[in-house]
Image (tube, rainbow, N blue to C red; front, side):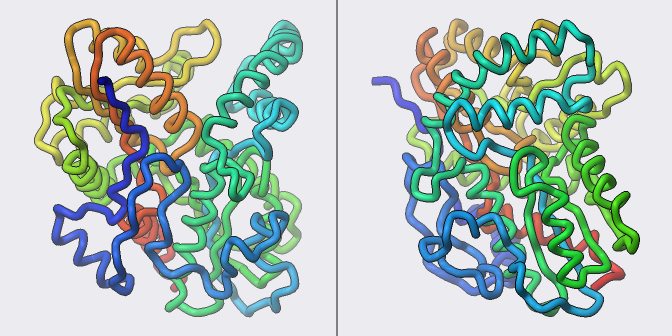
Length: 405
């Protein structure tokens, strides 16, 4: 019988890399390893200390879950804020909420650079009505029903809480919050909360390993919009792309090794899938493709694989224009037709599992692979809020906070 292993968790991090484990142990207290739950898209149990004063999720009202900085907390003097930012997700798994989210996303000129009357007619008359209903069904497949939110939001919140725990020894004047570029919580609202708490220095950390104008730059746009409204502006730092950061590559490789050991089959091919981008954007100067290629090259070198064992593709096309190739779905189909029976897909361009990894890769691509002759398919989880993933985020934060802490 064909098997699909969509979200196995080697959540303890790179167990086969003793030096990585040693760094992790130096940062957190030892604790029993969490159990694995292949059916649940939500992040693993807490591996690092939660943020100071964080209440258990079950005791927090849903409306309060998006507020990492209490509104009534006393301000500090010369506070330092750290804001984690991810792309965004609808507020509900229903078509109206998805439509609001997609409208905000697809009207961003960084994302869709055309602004013609024809595009607006197509967007509002065809794309939003049809795509919203279809995407709502997709979100329902992966929805975190316990918290009534997407796993992407669950994981991002957990990343912020765990980072707050690891930064706690620096003092109460260092505080961590999180935001989404589209939908909520908004970047402006969380920056305002940090400023009200007394932060006169803020580090913004877009969780995109590879830079793209449609991701990293649009986060900066929102940050600068907030800054334009401030009479007294805080000092500001932005985390640069970390596509070639040695520890990022090391964690990717060691985590993949741990996941592969847990699989009941040996992959014939490992596919590294990145989010797609129109070729036109690259021609205009976007460095995204080059940075994805560099990540893959370093990933191969760290693993000791060649370009036949670990191949690179792009997923999530939109519209009729030419996008970066090779396409993930076409490659998966071609591999199956060529006789590849065992396939593993890893997504090095995503810091947290989301619709594109949990549904598009783990469900749609798995279905295509088996339909055309493949047998075993595994979608490797993102680093998410795992010990190794959080240690990487901590190291990036500490690097960017030098001179402030």
